[in-house]
Image (cartoon, rainbow, N blue to C red; front, top):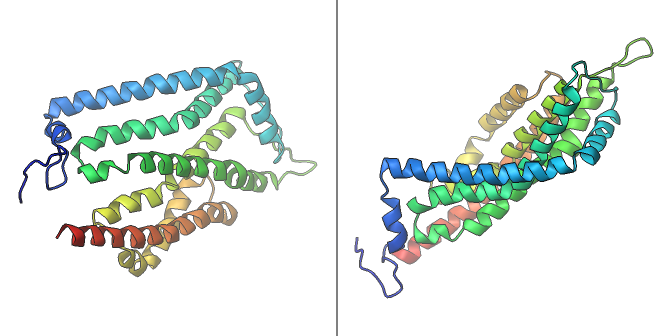
Length: 264
């Protein structure tokens, strides 16, 4: 394949000449680049957590009311539990706010090894990944966790009080938020797999029944209890995301074929 340089500084095979030099970094240079991206991410994450902690009191009151409205009265049995809750809460809010920057840093780490035309999706990737992650967190906050918590509190009677521990409750909440935030990245992952011809829409349709089984198993692993309600709350959005991902694979699989035909 010819690799002559055009007047625009791009190689005919689609590589950017300057960035192609970066793609040939040594192993130690890759480690140094990874260190830089991690440090940049930590700086922004710490800053966002610090700002969130500045507003710890309204956040604290909101979440105490949020957990209480779905049943039970929160309690804490350790002297520092209340303070640690405010710290953990600030960390979660800071992570959600910083997530677009974290996705950007992840992209910048892998970008040197990509074709020039593939680097053009940086803004769509960061936006879509951030939106999907936050959408998953929102779904967890508004639908998944309340449904789970109402089920747990449904056994409360006059003679049996539901007094959930603050640490355990928030720990479960964080797991649900992060789990669904990551699960909602499925269409993004399928987009890249389809672009690199790793999966196709036909492949995903043919293996649909296996995907359903995998979804149920994964939901059972994620959920803290084996009840049908909680399992359905996690399985339903995952199944919908899989169907959406089939559409993503079909759409961008066709685009990949058109691009390949144009290059020929």
